[in-house]
Amino acid sequence: MFICTLPQYVAHKTNVAQQFTPQMHYRLLHPGQGILGPASAIYASQPTTLPSAFSIMPPQDPTWHMDTGASSHLNFNASNLSTIFNKRLFLSVHVGDGKSIPVTNTGHSIIPSHHRPLHLHNVLVTPNIIKNLISVRQFTRDNNCTIEFDAFGFSVKDYLTRHILLRCDRSGDLYPVTKPSTSPIAFLSTSASTWHQRLGHPGDQGSQVAYLLIYVDDIILTTSCPALLQQIIGSLNNEFDMTDLGALNYFLGIYADRTPTGLFLSQKKYALQLLECAHMVTCNSSRTPVDTDSELGPEDLSYALRQICLYMHDPREPHFAALKRILRYVRGTMDFGLHLYVFATTSLVGYTDADWAGCPSTRRSTSGFCVFLGDNLLSWSAKRQHTISRSIAEAEYRGVANVVVETAWVRNLLCELHSPLMTATLVYCDNVSAVYMSANPVQHQRTKHIEIDIHFIRDMVTAGHVCVLHVPSRFQYADIFTKELPSALFEDFRSSLSVRPPPALTTRAY
Image (tube, rainbow, N blue to C red; front, top):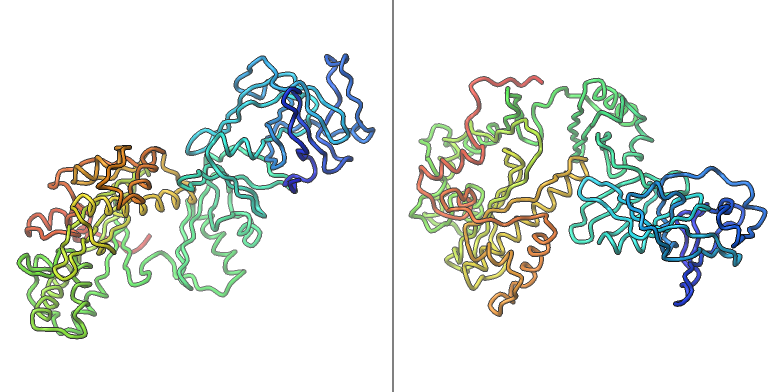
C-alpha cells in the first residue's frame, strides 16, 4: 500500500481489477472523510450502500488533485472534459468496504502549461466522487514526465530535459493542480512561499515581478515597479543588517552604466590596475591579443591568458613577449565593454567551433562557443577538450555537445525565472558532418566512441528543444575563440559579440 499524498480525500488502490471484471478497487484512508457523494438516480437498479459517515459530504470541487494511490483519473462531471468518448472502460469503482460507485462515461482532458499541454487520457466519469483525482502513475507515463513533491507543493518536470512544465502550491494537506500563471509572481527563491513568509507580500504579486541576485554579501535587486522595489528593500532591512547603495553602479569589479538602449558593462578599473602593475599604462596598443604567427594558439583573450599561464613557472623570452602583446591589447581596448540591450525574450542561439588538434604539445582540440539571448551575448567559453579527438568531425561534435549543455541550463534558468522560451534553441556549427550526425538516427561504427554525446544531442533534437544548423565560416562568430584570424575579421567578430566602445553619452544614474 502506498502512503497517500492527499490524506483527507484520496483513496488507495488495494488490488488490480480482475481481467474479466470491469471495475476498479480503492481503499479509503479515512472512512469519515471520503471522496464519495450520493449515488446517481439513474443507477437505482445497482444500489450503492455506503456507511452513514458519507451522508454529509462537502460540495464537489472541480479542481484536479494529484493522487499517488489512484490507478486511473477520476472526474465527477463529464462537462469538465474536453473530449467525451461515450463509452465506459469500467462499470464501477470499488471502495474499501466492498461497495461500489458507478462509472458513467470516459473522456479526455488537457492541462495547459508554458511548454506543452499535459494530457489526461481515459478519465473515468464518476458522479459520486467529491474530488477530481489524477493518477500520478498514469499521468507520468502518458506525458513522459516526473512529479516531485515537496513541503510547499509539487513540480511536473520533463523526463529528458528536467524542465519544469508545471509548478503548483499545496493547499493544506492537498496537492491541487492550478492553472499556470500568465503573469509571473515575485521570484525570490525556488519556492516563493518561503520568502513570502519572511518578507510578506509587497505590492500586487499577481502583476509584478522581482529578481534577487546574491553573491556572498552583495545583492542586486530589480523589480517591475519602484513601489515593489522599496517594499522589498524595507522588508530585507527588517530581517538583515543591510546597506542600500542605491542604483546599480559597480558590482564585483564590473561597472554598469545605463544607456538609452540598455546597459554597458566594463572592467576599465581592473584593466588600468593591470597596466599600472606592469608599468605599461602609456605603452603602444595592439589590435589583437596574439600574433597570428605565434604558436600560442587562438586570438581570444581568455584563451591567450591560459596559454601564458602554462609557462608561468618556467617562462622564456617568447612568453614574456606574448604577455606584453596581451597587455598592449588590453591598453588599446581599455574602454571597451559588453553592450546589453532591452528586448523581448524570444530566442536562444548558440555558435560553436573547434580547433582540431590545435595544441602542439598534446594535440588536444579546443572548443569554443558563445550563446545569445536575443541580441545579447549571455555566455561564452574557450576550453581545451579533455580527450584527443580522432577526427575534425568528432572535435566539432564535442563542441556542439558543450553548447547544448550550456543552452539547456540557460533554458531551465529562464523557466525558473518565469520567462520560459517557447521556441527551440538554434545551434550553429560550420562542420557539415557534425550537423548531419545530430539528426541522423543511424549509429555508424566510426561514431561509437562518441556515443554518449551523440545520444544526448539527438534526444534534445528529437524533443524539439534544440535544432542544429550549418553556418558558413564567414559568419561563425565562435571562430574568435578557437582560430587565428586576420585583424579585420577579428574586429568584425568582436563587434558581433557586442564588445565595443561605450556609446557617446552614458549615465550612471538609473
